[in-house]
Length: 452
Image (cartoon, rainbow, N blue to C red; front, side, top):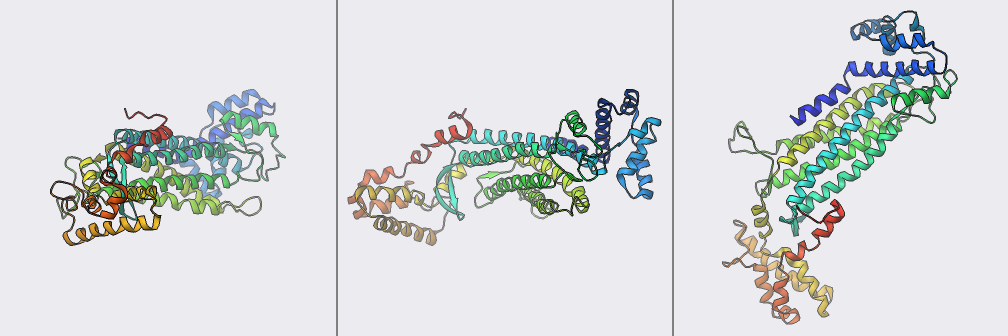
């Protein structure tokens, strides 16, 4: 329901009717501005604002002859008016109307995206707080590293999306600009006061300077921001996909009753939503390049940008909106398996504590090179056991009492024991050492140390 609502709301902003409605909104604001400056009589202004309307079928019919959509639009509107139609579209050019109208569409669409990101961050925050101390193994190169918590994984996502939120807020101002500067942007036919009045009426800021178009670096910045946002969302989706792998199985997309994973294999439960999100993010990033290529237009303008924007703006916004809604749903329903996380954390029989042991030796006067050699030699013995016996049920690297094989080898190393003692070695295998800073980290990220 969330995805469908978000998609329909955004789609409505980029429908054909919405496009012409935005054009009409700009044209009416122009009429009101001219009236305030004394050019258009008040009665004519009121008639235009009350009665002006368009007919999409009629616009399409006229455009077959004119081969110009804006002229077809103004002609259609003029047919709904009387003599006052002479004031409609007075003093401006097509791009003044279209670019200012598109600014309204982009502004309203970006506000939805910003709300989407806020909702996604809130879902991630709740997962982070819920699993603040849920231990799991951290991985580099896909290989087990050291203990972390799933809450820390979520905190990174939350913080990263916060940067995107700040960028989008800033870009909202960049794209919320209009222009009514005339055919070459010289304000020869429209006084600067008019541009300021109309933009204020529409809730936009006048472009400080323009030629025949609003400059496309603004659009490119928008599409690049959406592309960067998509990259971070794909990062989250890829992590979910990795965690759902059978060999890992630390988290899983919610699998609904009656859902099917494969037409051939009834047992399958696939991360299809996260895979879908990954694909959608690739598409969103693809729109950034043509947006950047649109920046360089010939002289005061050409229309090479127009056909591009008819694709990338509606498709970019609609896809991003749908993707964010879907990812939010995935995070909210994500099933976490703490027992499997702990099983995997123990999978290598304590090797994840190797750095902790390493750091104790320099405190006793041992060189780093010698300390590394001592710890690595014992670690390689454990790897040999793992290679020979396999990793069964996450317990193959533990002895029958559940004690770490790595710890056993370290305690059997007389040189190491003589250097730091048995108790110090055992203390290196306490999980609390790796969670002692989580409150401080969460305080920096979320502004609270509470997991409640």
